Image 1 (cartoon, rainbow, N blue to C red):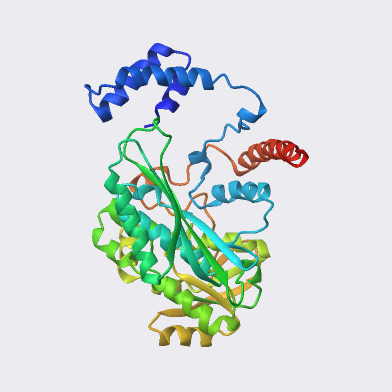
Image 2 (image 1 turned 45 degrees about the horizontal axis):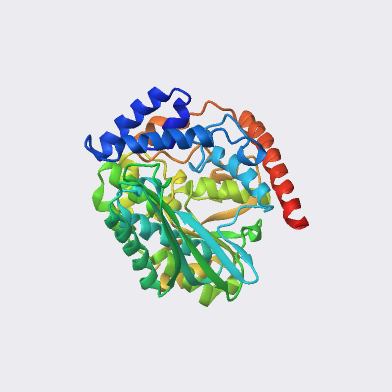
Length: 422
């Protein structure tokens, strides 16, 4: 619960602020919490002071677009529109799992928001995701960076459980944890137990960089078996399929990347993983190369772990729009790649081919489109309620973001000019 947010929302009605803050503090800390009244007075004072900070440097561009309703983080069209502007601000082109500079490849992955109350699983899957992002680009992992924020009432055991999840993957691959940061969400202002954070991974390129820009017309798509990660774990927990969680506790996806990078890299053009938003989202991002995927739907489905696929079917979740943690390999030597993977006990099939872009980023074997959606496949009860609802059209979202991006750029350039002149 964001106490500062409550106070800002209700300001300048100080009596209502105090009443609401008292209610929330008593809920989490009890009616006899000795610091309650002093904390309430301090919050009111801080908010009243900070809310009067005026000027360009203190204010952000208001879009009147709410993150959730815009699809931020929901790995569909809405999220894609938003991240296009993030890339623009960062002076980057195209979507990559991880980028390279001087042969160093780096990535960062946030923990799954719904795994806050399951810290070991949150740490395990975020670490696996960060390492996979650099490894599908061709990197040999050098180290892991850890960032975790606890709320004011989080049990400190959550921190240790999270670190154990990170360390499990770290030790399984013999990749060191190099640095970390442990803080509280919002300092003293956020009460409750939720945790947040992310994992970074750093690697060195030994052979080829498997950029998504290397995906070209005529290449074949080889896909490996996927057992899911943080998203499938979340799906299982919040829908009562607890036995599926153990299927996700695997590093076969990382071992697949390691084998490709060491043994058959010269036969591979590009790699990526089937994660955020599923293969629909992967195809949407890569379609900026003016290409489409043409895939065999049954072959795709056959490569999803049977217990995971059974759960998705029972819950009526579209498997083409959800993270399954398979590896997509783009190659002109599909049989060789498939054979090498199979010889290592890794299930893989040639699921399709890269074609010239034709209206949709991805189609099936009969040219039926697998259409991109505003959000990924809804996989928890609350996501199913929200579905693809948004009060914004794609055009209104893009227009609002264009204006905000211009203002953010102007602020950046103004401060940058000052820094360079000092």
